[in-house]
Length: 272
Image 1 (spheres, helix red, strand yellow):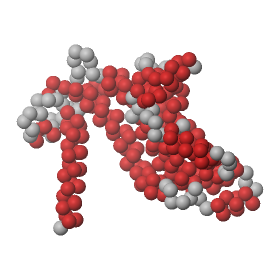
Image 2 (cartoon, rainbow, N blue to C red; image 1 turned 45 degrees about the vertical axis):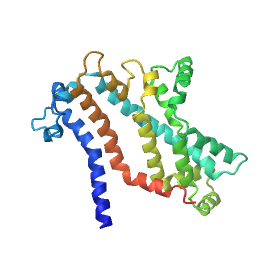
Image 3 (cartoon, helix red, strand yellow; image 1 turned 120 degrees about the horizontal axis):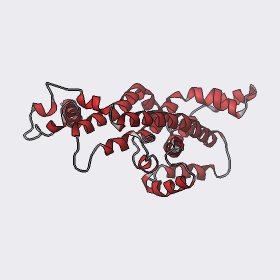
Image 4 (tube, rainbow, N blue to C red; image 1 turned 90 degrees about the vertical axis):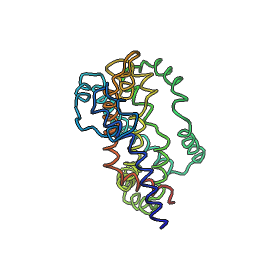
């Protein structure tokens, strides 16, 4: 009986989370003038559209959000590749080497992801302007490649790699880079994928930093372009909801594809 009650409760909670998403998807298939037509009173027509139209999605191709979405994909992919190289190297140094101050340095890494990025975004943007990195893809990517949470995750996973494998590699003539390349990285694919997903989501959903750095049409990112669809005097909510669906589906597909690796990486963190 208790299990049935928990299952029913879980289903109700899941439905409460699903209904707003269904409403957004449904209204993205309606003209903007009909967005709130069936909102009061609530009925099945509020969440279902029997005559869907792709007009809003077609209009996205003529708006800035189309190019902005491609920019977001490019910036997020670059952040994942460069970020994994930086974070994995830092995690390897913190896991494989004994040196004075290692614990203190690791504490600084942990502290870095406890500080909200938005708290340092404005002074950091001033620094980037002095470096002439405004309206450049480099300026958009650089703050995301050194992620303290990704370093923490990878370092904890690296600590679980048997020391005997490292000693055997060293006896076979591998240098430390060889140990990192041929022992640590192949054994850490789940952790690397999990860290890569963190870097991807951090960059994909960023709003304040792209708003400060990517201000021209060539470097605008998806969240900023989506907010720009809301005009001062008129807002086409059908177009806004269509843009929101597009920006949600892309990371959803990525997460669904790598979900099992992410769960495995998190569950393995801190075993040693």
